[in-house]
Length: 197
Image 1 (tube, helix red, strand yellow):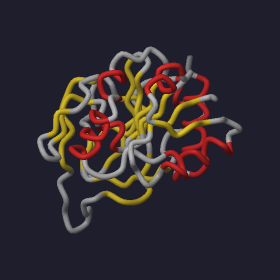
Image 2: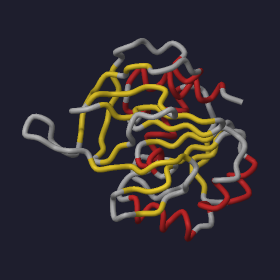
Image 3: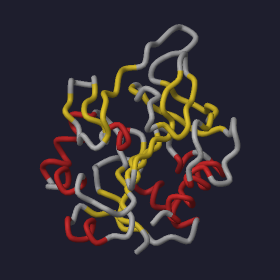
């Protein structure tokens, strides 16, 4: 197995697993703590609300263990948001791996919320996750909440203001977009994650 995908109850688990299969990687969707702990890499997907996702992670015992993992961990969409201290969505206490609060996007008639669709990446600092990714490559977003740009930000996107599209500190990283739905650029980011040690 190349990576464990945490069974967070989201509907995108099969498409995420298939995206890794296309890269030749073997993954297992699991909520088993021993399997997650021993996996060479861990993916935290997320679809739905922050409160429900955190309740599930707490109920299956994954939340406390996640903060202690030393292998590469990738949070995707809501999974990335859960790596922060809090989310404005239901004023939810999250995992606290990254400092800061995830906030609701401000919608306008020209920029509705949720933000759904393709948007360009803008690299902020060099990182192995960006190997082979060009400035202004497009990736696919579906979200209503986002993290501000900070010293964690590897790449940003602009949706009426800059937001963190990729974040990383030490072994923990996250993408606000869905790499499994982001064509060649998303596949490149997932392949780069598989090379992290």
